[in-house]
Image (cartoon, rainbow, N blue to C red):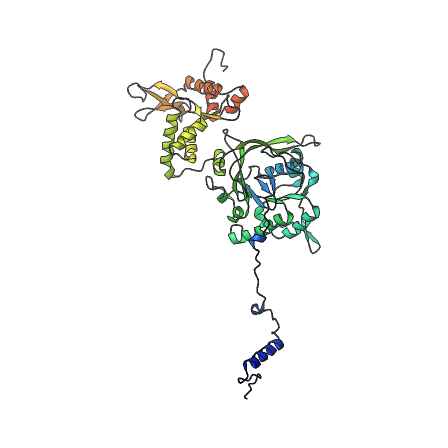
Length: 479
């Protein structure tokens, strides 16, 4: 028989070969791990069979709006009152109060707040107290310690420490992170980095069995776009949150002061919202001190995009929109030619004629449509009407064949008023008293009191009063 150096004999029977292989394997010692990637242990995947998964219902803190173990984002433009909304919800939760939809908070719970925006002593606590929060249930994240040294809390790397602190407190049902963008240590506009930074926040919600509400901002110049796309930073902020809420304020005198709406929900219905406003209320036990508080209003129906469109300013019109706006202006002018009409009715007819909501708003603004809150509609319905114009015989001043032509009274460079002639000349003319009185009369017809009349006065109507003041009256100039 011929043996090789390793002791193996090709002439062995199969049984002898198998015995030799088994003995060699038992004596084999793998080389020591030198740290190279070639010798690192491989990762393994853990699977669970669907049949072994226990079905659990969503644990709603506020049904349809806030759920325990989930990440939520509340976004909006600066100054919209996002943080104050969060404080209002805290007041409801810590006192087992009533939510805006009329539902009761099942039981009072503890809340943790980390804010890089507001100061706890002169802003957050006064607002909480003014809104009736149980401040014994509210905790502020003041900082962190590392290596025995104190340092500022960093949401991008201290989530594990926060989870431990929350477990020590016990009974925490809501965590506020203001702003949520600071949970991302890298570039928050990059999807991968944003997701990596937000994952510990998602894990915090699950480990703490609490709802996490992160405050975010809208990117400037994003009017009319999808609310989710408007959140500053990566799309990951909207994607990883199970519920996304949006808030906006109204800079005009028409419609609700401010609104909050559900832009997205992966765990319940989306859309719809509530009217709210900010008001100053006295801080109990602190004479002379007032704090900003939320006054909740009626429920709203519609998508978040539609509700935002009702209160936000218009996006600048592009050249391509000009024709659409002009057609919408013609439609609205014809619709209101016979007199005032319910705003919702005009909007519905305009949409039925193929005009988009954004185009309708722009056409309304271009026409200087007068919007007045009707006296017979305490719920807040609005009536639209065209501005009261001065209708004159224009046979010798621009009109043709003695037809009646409606003209706006506008000042020219001399400070007087002028109107356009057929040949393009400007004819100086004093403002019409009848048109000025007509404007004021139209407002008075829809106002129940002098106070409401004052609220309905817009820039055009203030100009009306100035016009009336230029006329002498039998009462010695008194209107």
